[in-house]
Amino acid sequence: MSYKLNWLVSNTSPGSLVLQQWLSENGISYSLAQKYWESGWLKKLGAGVYYRPGPGDQPKPDWTEALKALIQQLHLPVHLAGLSSLNHQGLSHYLQINSETVWVGTKEKQALPKWFREFGQDWQYCGNHKLSEQVEKDFITRSVNGRELRLSSPELAAYEVVDAIGKHISFEHAAELFQGLVSLSPRKVQSILSRSRSVKTNRVFLYLSHYYDHPWVKRLDESVIALGAGKRQVVSLGRYDERYQITVPVSFSRNSGHHDD
Image (tube, rainbow, N blue to C red; front, side):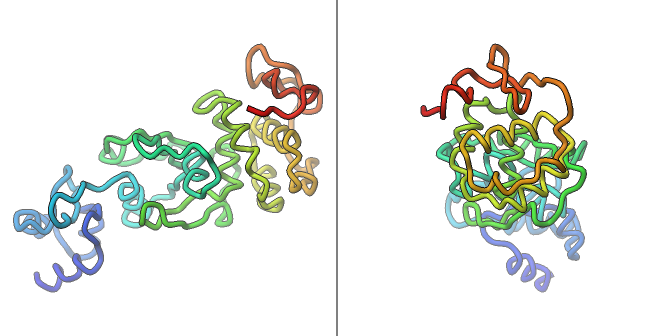
């Protein structure tokens, strides 16, 4: 028992979220975990969900611990996505210190644990099912609030933001984010758009790239990107863009110049 307790202390830190499934995989049974709970080595958040208490009144684990547990203990293919990924890479002016809505990238129809969905955090789910496949270069690892997490690369995060227009984010907000994305990798953008099955998302992504005249857009080969045929409505009461056959806010019309808030 002392050996296993030493393992627990060595492999977690005060404030760490600890899942029973992970404990069982490492030789700590449910009954032994209960003893650790009764002895104060673990505190219980819910069925099969614990955390290591810290000194004094240290706060309970936050959303970074919940996401880290999915990635590192359950090995689920999830990641910090879209707006949240851009925020925590310093690529957005919209970082919310309190009550942050956290964008989580998941696979299509992936079932996340009940404890995660009911964690008390405002999660915003992004399904990347519009990409024919995901590759390792779509992701990066970064420290977020002192926790190592898997994040969308800036290129994938930009794609996730554009794909969320009209659902989780306004065209104007997405465009303002896009304005600062001057250093995207044209190779990674090309790869993502070439794998994308969403005609509307591809068109809006390219429209915003040209609107802000980012240098990397000149190196994209649009002939291998699915742009489809026919018109697509992105916003209502907008102005029609001939090149990409989409409706955009009047203030973002090519004829009106760059939008400057």
